Length: 59
Image 1: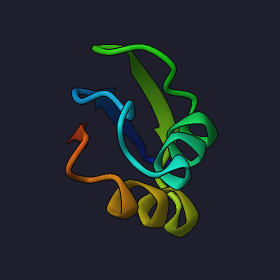
Image 2 (image 1 turned 180 degrees about the horizontal axis):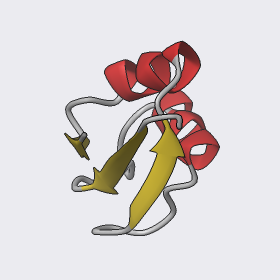
Image 3 (image 1 turned 180 degrees about the vertical axis):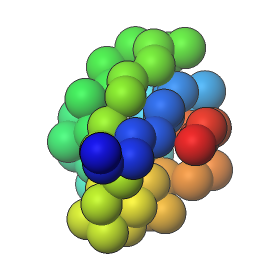
């Protein structure tokens, strides 16, 4: 069974570069305090690493 990771958006992308908003959209995060469950893959981990200052991660 594949492992999953929970990602919660804690800070808004407003006022930041558009790149961060695109990464958050790719993760499926649209609103503050929204939590999504994603497969734990290297691609997802890389996206999380790019916006780690805006999200919290639970294994």
